[in-house]
Length: 573
Image (cartoon, rainbow, N blue to C red; front, top):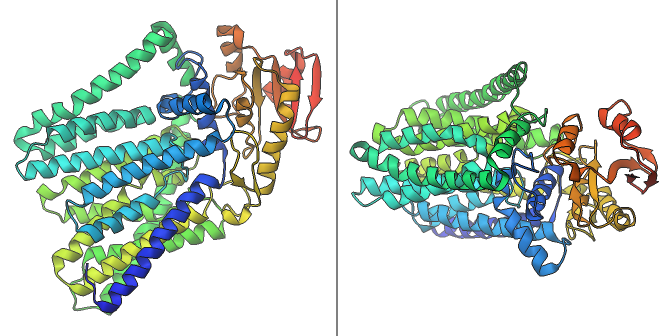
């Protein structure tokens, strides 16, 4: 990294600002915002911690990702005697794990760069957040575990190139890949492509490398699945698989028109955002040629500037359309295009690194879309592996040029990207309330599992009001079904206010109230609800009167008492 006296001082000031900003963004992620996507995964892990049996009483598509949070919830409840403040505890634990993975990423980068350069790319990685969550929910677990997997495989390949032993790194990468699949089972489709990357990269030792990677992965996955087959019973386990794949019509793989409904939005967003990304690159390329006709411009310089422009446009998209962080990340398609082009110009023996990261990013996005009810472009953040990969390529190419101006340009790009992610992580919120950024924060939750979290005024107010009245209407040991049709409602967390039995088969989509509930209660009659809790607004029921669940409550549930709280209605039989 090129420095003179003046630039050295500027770099130090910028580095201080980036470190302080990174800490502030980290604290914001721990203490600010609480949305339904985080809520349902915490409640899912909670029901596992409270004794629900996976693949038996839980028909949750993401239940395997509870392996991280469920033990932590047990520990917290054992130490505190309740759930008040649990969410912040889980966020702190997730943040500590993220820091640990970041330290490992820095260790990998030090094999290619000096201390300052590796630290700068590491700082960018630290500020990347796939879902804008601090908790170890499935998207974070997938990102962290695949970061470990890719990093270990890169170290293994580098050691092979140096003639050193590499088997331990591949064994460990097999273990971390199995954890990634547990976090998000659809990522199993990546396995053969990872194997192809390894077989092609390790030449004469390909069989040994393949075995070192695959055997621990298969053994660990088999042990985990085998344990749950024994716990649930083989017949129940496989029967539950069919229930999981049909229980939530908004998220899960189905037949018929499902594939058309999935493929068309993918094509639309790919053409739209990919076209925008390609247009940005072509415009920057034309600008470079116009301004420097006789210069042999580096493609990485052009792509670096294209990345910065796409990030500015992404921020503009967030503000103009008032969307949340997960929407319209134009820079991800830009990175796909740039890394594909860059890799074509690489020597064959050096293509392993980028091939591996492109493959991981592609399947992370695609697998996320297969089990999602969100627009395809909202899955772009799952391709975040591309960001540090491109920055490493940009910096390496500038160093190899031995051109001080190009090195300074590359450093400037890295600093800009780092500040962008500090802004995104520290200022933006997920799609939900108002402008979807921290300017909507007006209140703090004072009670319950979300205690201490700053949110919009009504969000915290409603959670505190629900908590205050819950024990007046729900008794310990009750079997409870919560019915919500409000997208931004945090009602599901009410399951954690008292020691109750959850009467729903899945927390993934609280809008899935249909005949599948009858099948669940027939299978497990001991979970038939004593109390059904619905959204209301000072006595005005927020439930579609043409819906299946409303008709069931009114005609089949046989309730004997109805009471209204401020924001919840309680039907008790």
